[in-house]
Amino acid sequence: MVTHDRATALSIQLTLTHQALRERVAVLRHQLRSGGQGGPPAGSDLLEHCTSFCDALERHHTGEDGGLFPALRRKFPELAPMIDKLAEDHWLIAGILRRVGELATAHNADPAAVAGELDGLAAIMDSHFAFEERRIGSAIDALKATRREIAAAEWLIAGQP
Image 1: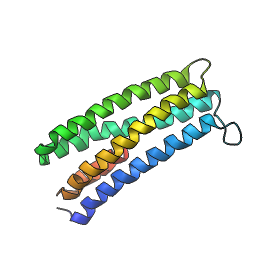
Image 2: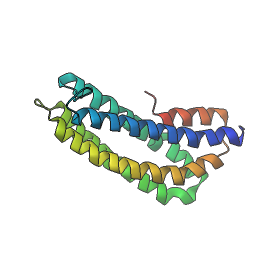
Image 3: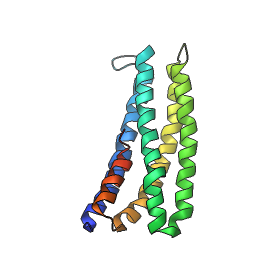
Image 4: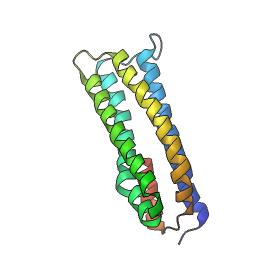
């Protein structure tokens, strides 16, 4: 078994991953809206920026849904209703990500339309991440996991490719 300090690092990793995703969407929204330096990415750059962000967020949520959430359900069955709510949020966010992808890949992609979708996504992400950090963070910190489980959880939380 690993120490509690190592398990606590998982909640910190979750928070840091969420912060990185918040920063990425903020930068992307700024790029789409600004007309000067750091202005809207054009053409394939718009697609690349949006795709990169959307992929990172999707990997993060897929990792939680497929690994972290089932592990938490096994160890903390009383958290099942809260985990169901978080998984439902992931489904909602996935729909917005699809819409962002559709807008970004349109023939004449409109940066303002993409930014508008990202504004809504950012608001949902902030609420979802804050709730998740409050509720799952303490459960992760209470886990008594093997080194292998912790390595897998770190990988899933970070949403590595």
